[in-house]
Amino acid sequence: MRPAARLERVYREHGDRLWRAVLAFAADPEVASDAVAEAFAQALRRGGEIRQPDRWVWRAAFRIARGELKARRGRQALVAREERYGMDTETVELIEALGRLPSKQRASVVLHHGAGYPVREVATIIGSTPAAVRVHLSRGRRRLRDMLGGDDA
Amino acid sequence: MPDLESKFRAMDRVRGPDLWSDIETREPRPMPEGSTARRVAAGAVALVLAAGGAVLVARAFLGGDQAVERRVRPAESPPAPVDPVVDVTLPIRWPSSVVYGEGSIWVAASANDGTGAGTVYRIDPDTAEILAEIEVPSVPGWEVGGGGMEVADGSLWIAGYLDDGDQGALLRIDAATDALADVVPLGGQFAGDVAVDQHGIWVTVFAEPSEELVRLDRATLAIDARASLDVDWAREILAVDGHVWVRATKDTLLGVDPASGDVLEQVVVPGGVTSMTTFQGAIWAATWKASTGNLVARIDPVTGAMELLPSDPLGYLLEAGPSGLWGRWDPGVRGTLGVARFDPVEERVDASVALDRGAQPIAIAVASDSVWVADYEEGVTRVELRPA
Image 1: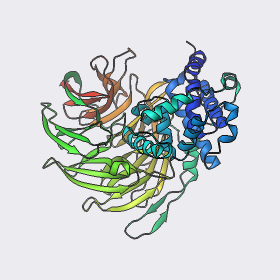
Image 2: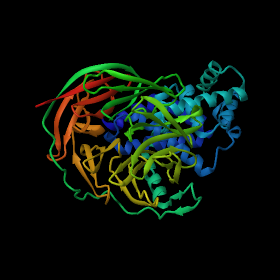
Image 3: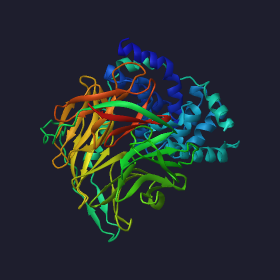
Image 4: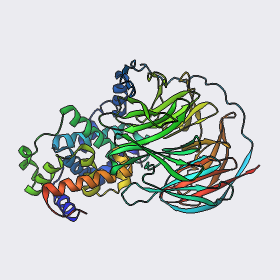
């Protein structure tokens, strides 16, 4: 299969889930769209050089989104765009609560609990270690429980 | 946290835009890793001498494209011919690192219980007998590549962390007693790697807002220097012939003056580094490019001069020891991986063996007559090196 066709298939399989994960991380649909599109565009330019494009684009999209947030010095309010993307109150509350977590805690929670990646994959995506990711998850869950209520695991 | 899972599932109703047409037509921005490298190049490094409280501002990194191939001093001698044979696999779960030293193989294995704790196994490299099992509060946690352990001064040194990830730590196991002898808190979040040379014990520490390079006194284990690197990722440290090198970001090696803390050299390895080690006075790094396949970079630790040598089908992992320079062997057959040796004189792979089908080697240790391979989930395999 040609690299471009292979990548489009990856986009069709992962694109929506990746976009939601980056949205949960960045709280900004525009940042999510830009990070996902940029990650796939970078992958498209590299062609067959990338051995595992699905893993690569997840890593790249989160790195790009993180860079954008750093440039903006933090997340911006999501609520103003709420209706535009049809989010319900529960989703808005979740994203706002995530916004109060440090960056790596937030990314770990989104990738593990939101996107369903195992700890070792999360570590690969965010450039950390499985041990550190477990710590981020434990602390992130605790803080989210305090903010949103519910049981910690 | 079931509630959290259900909250995320509710988010599944949110649909994102179809971006494919934008993806196909947009001009990609400069590479993210390049921008990181530029930040490195623009930055200065501050070495804080903890004892005196003095701050030495190091000079800016050397600029320019360092990916220039120059001849590095030749290899010293060809390795003796060997016939590698897969011998035995010890059923050790979740091994994360393996090293050779003090006449033993040392394997760190995670308890995988979320605490970071684990067990260090000391193994006789000739008989594969487990000589000791030492419980430790932290083992190296890297997913692939091993590292985070070094044998020196009659001790096994481990880069880890304490307090549920609140700070990095250096652990020492006394090879004379097989007991955990010291645990030194290092600050930051967790330690990435450790190397020992005549200047001290060097540890990379992941910290906010920048990774750090910490030096400890070999006799007292007191922290006597702490360098704040202007990078957001720095892992391996190599100490060779009085020179200290740190891998920062995917493809950049920083040569640090151990006396002044200056970053003396910056070497960019095309394709990025997946593994690195020292052998015969040089730094060796595994890299890969689509146009060439697997390569090993041989880098002079004094000048930073680098040459790239084709190494297919050896790549991804590299480790050196008494029996030579070894790496992962990937013949391109699905489910088949092994280990292979690179001859630095002939500059080619001169020995290889396939591991059991489905093996996923993540770290290698090289002893005199054997090579040891840690698997991703379970198993540490001894490969016997018979004279050819």
